[in-house]
Amino acid sequence: MAKKKVVLTGGGSAGHVTPNLALITELQKEVDFFYIGSKTGIEKELIAKTEVPYFSISSGKLRRYIDLENVRDIFRVMKGVIDARRILKQIKPDLLFSKGGFVSVPVIIAAKMLKIPAFIHESDLTPGLANKIAQRFAEKVFTSFEEAKAYFPREKVFAIGSPIRPEIFNGDKNTALKLLHFSSVKPIITVMGGSLGAKKINEQVRKELPNLLGNYQVVHICGKGQVDESLLGKAGYKQFEYIHEELPHILAATHCVITRGGSNALFEFLALNMPMLIIPLSKKQSRGDQLLNAESFAQKGFAKVVEEEAIGSLLHTLRQMELDRAEMIASMSKSPLTNGLKVIVNEIRER
Ligand SMILES: CC(=O)N[C@H]1[C@@H](OP(=O)(O)OP(=O)(O)OC[C@H]2O[C@@H](n3ccc(=O)[nH]c3=O)[C@H](O)[C@@H]2O)O[C@H](CO)[C@@H](O)[C@@H]1O
Image 1 (cartoon, protein in one colour):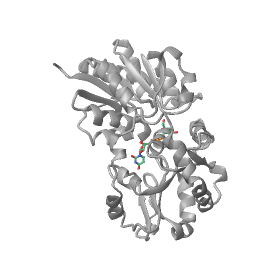
Image 2: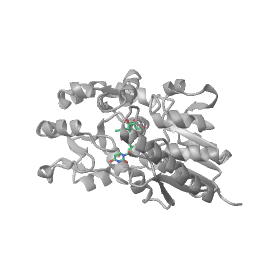
Image 3: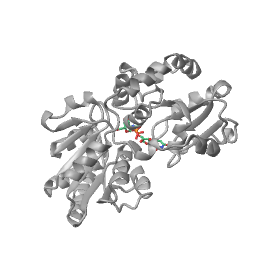
């Protein structure tokens, strides 16, 4: 019997790609996957690490405000639809699965034109513009947050958690200690400033580094081009632009994380019962989705949240968190919504 063909799309930042990587790992023996992404986005680099054929299309940023670039982008999106239609006609997939991000919009429009059924997944508590558009063309909408269901038509939305890469659960602490040249004496804090880094968090970590290193060892994922050369070789401190396959090991050795409020990272930490201090991206720099993600996690007792404007002393906040640690872990271990991978895998199998 011929294998089922599934086209994956989504990109712009890693959070719009890693759930697709989870599906690839889980289903690659039974499904022929293809990926449609942008010409330069992080999705291209991440998919290049798999065997999945990658097709790039023209894509424009979708802005909520009027701008000359907006007009150009409308043409880029139209060109993207033409590109995607040509690629989809060639592949003839049984299904499109979209993880959102600007690049996914032309793909889902083209899929609708060709009567190819589509599923989408929304990671955040409130939908991004791309998925607001895409949901009209989708047969089913999956969400990470229960609260997100309210933003989609009732008959086609299902809250399932986040599709988490299986390897995230298979880390080995000792492998991490060797890789980092860390000891097992002081606990390890991992700072993950979102897949694209976080300037403000980077500055604060470095400002407090001498104090932090008195109590902890620090793994700092600081984003592309953000490594501070003057701190290379500092004992107990390791910087990374991005961590690929070593991430599960690092997390297995981690005592607690300081993180942005990107939903996929949050659900990974939740599934690992990892205490987290969330510093969400502020409303000045985004549509405020991370603030809502973070607030929901704090309300459920999974995390402590500090807003970027009120960041204060990280060490002080970490010390406070130690007091709530056991309670936080207990709340996380009781959460019904964490890993949504199985649901999507079954949906794809049943098509
Ligand atoms: C700036 C921005 O627009 N951020 C958005 C983006 O975040 P971003 O892409 O940063 O978000 P997420 O936290 O959702 O996902 C990051 C993913 O990358 C992985 N990872 C990250 C760093 C690293 O070194 N290695 C690694 O593997 C994480 O394990 C996770 O799977 O998409 C999220 C999901 O829609 C949103 O909630 C965020 O608001």
